[in-house]
Length: 183
Image (cartoon, rainbow, N blue to C red):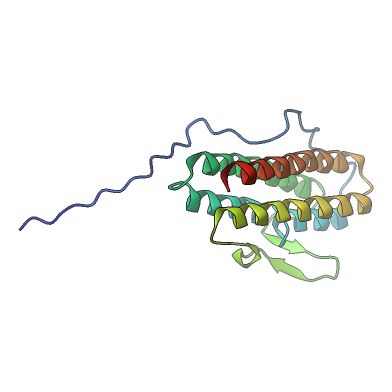
């Protein structure tokens, strides 16, 4: 007796998906001088609990779980994740220029080092809760960036952080629209 073969495929195409970001250039990636304290602050933005690493991973996880049910929503989340990848790359460059190390360790002000973990992620079951968790993560990132900008006395670094904030604010607007249209 011949076994029935089961063929499953995800028909959601991600060809042509582009980063979801504000249509403005980023400032040149440069620093005034090396500063380990600034590098440590940016390491938290890079891979702390509230970080680009967490954002990327959470968006990709949500995109994967939604792609079979809601392709347009999944495509948008992938585009946002791509923008977050660009933020991660720019932060990594700044950390290195400042004399720090990019090694997935968030170096906190209290001297405590925290290695990035997926435990930092919110992984709700339903699309609306996913999008709401993404909005909260974007708001937390903006707040953290603003706090770090007050602590960093380097206009070159702060210009990059300000530009990243523009994307994060845009992501909130997009996510709110997605909730209205898809949930």
